[in-house]
Length: 283
Ligand SMILES: [Zn+2]
Image: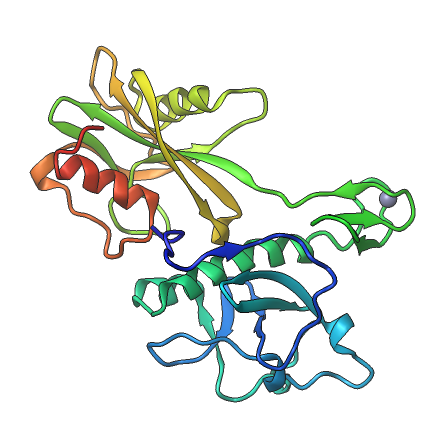
């Protein structure tokens, strides 16, 4: 999965005292795109390859995000005109970088993780309570209002991925919009419900079947959508007739192990859960 970067290791401890140096890498996002090199070996701009606008210091321009091993990653804290970044880098779609099997994989994980944090910084410039300007906390990854002192923490949205099992078959879906490969039932946790209740509700909403024996499988950070994904298997309970939600899905079918067509890359929790069932592992 995308976060499986062993022997590399993510260190995301907050440290506002780290100042960017020439060789550190910088993430600059625009929607779902990022400045990256165009080689198969993925590279991101280095601090020394960015021309700071007049009057901007490194301390004010770059925010430390995290490290992977000795590689340190920063966010560029300003709207970026094209000419500040070396011509060796182009704006590229994050999903395409992942699906192109770009190496090394830990840098794709770095980009997804950075996207999540940078989206939150971008969306937390002003206080949600009083509209005042937000400033970086000196002690933790948080933004604090300069007027009313309200503190906002990074937003991580929990969502479930559900493998619903019916004997030798599993419920595969395809989304109506966007991603066009096989998937599992998925959805966000609503306020006031347990994650197990999310599983029950989402399966009922999308496929119209009841489930039992809900069991946790594993989790995955999925920064491009600001999610933490929680994977569960469960068994169909009673009538297995599918009533599909046409708004969300274009297909929902019980699929035999041997007929499962996996996703084109190995990065997702969904794909690992489908593969486990296909290969007859105990789920
Ligand atoms: Zn405020």
